[in-house]
Image (cartoon, rainbow, N blue to C red):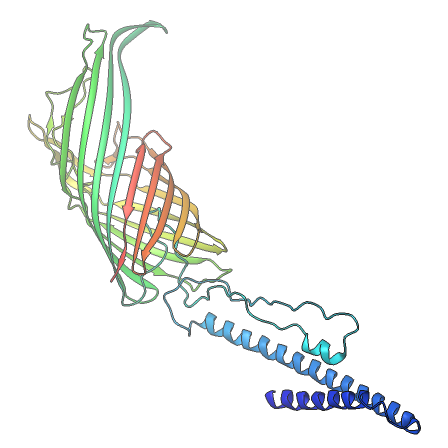
Length: 444
């Protein structure tokens, strides 16, 4: 192609030189006018022919550029160019065209002023088949750890919740008149959880995770007995701190996904009962309300007291410039036999106890603001079933609905370190009113 271009340039140069020579000969004899006119026509034909050849060469060059672009795109899709970057749409080179040639210009001048294609920008190319990263707001992350990579993630979470309860004991003569006692109780709960999470990429599709939490909780119960002549509220404070329930999780990416195809990630989480058992925490039965309650805990437990398994499925759908994500899960807790509740008046036999299954789902979207920061918004819901005691549903057990609206922010501080902050607001009565989570994954 370069040889043809030089040959064409040489011919055009000779043709122009001929035109100049012909135009600079005013002293030619009049008898040669016919031959001169014939030479000009010949030169014009040659120039037009050279122009057609140059146009053909430009078309060949455009075809070669298209083939080269397809080859680069095929290399990007197959992942040959490397891994470790999020997938993106294939690069589409933009062009800048030169202004149109002025009217009356010669074909040679038009060729010299022909538009030249120059790339002015290129989108990031996809180098692997992993899902794009988003600001994490749920417990299940979307991006798997690359093969052979360690990620160390310290985190800190604060949760606050408050609840009010009014209990009536007595009978009514008319709907507006109560004969009996009214108990009003307000509970303020706070918890602070520091955790260390370690993830290891076994393959590009499979990773393992271990999480070790340490929990500190403190509660305040404010109660007031109405209609007994007492106007002073009673406050009972209690707290507790210890290691929480250690968790082990495995995640596997089921498919390759792509720019127009969703990613499916299956997970299985095992939760131990290493935290303080709620049945081992002593209950002071001398501190009871007028409603005949069982008393208050002298220490706050830091664990659930049950082993559990939680399978789940996460879906991510890239749709530039956002990523839609969601998932479903189900937590099954194993029952315990010969359970005893510890109190200051002796142990209470509870027998066989099994918590209800917890079905959860979540959905949301993530938006990359720039190459360093991203934003996510989502909703998380958990429906916890009734507790069974000795094979039957406990009389005081009810199904609990937990709904949380979450906002997440992510900022990449360094190539191997990212700061993630999420804020959760409870939308149901049983959900914590506020939940703040700060994470900093560090790639080793």
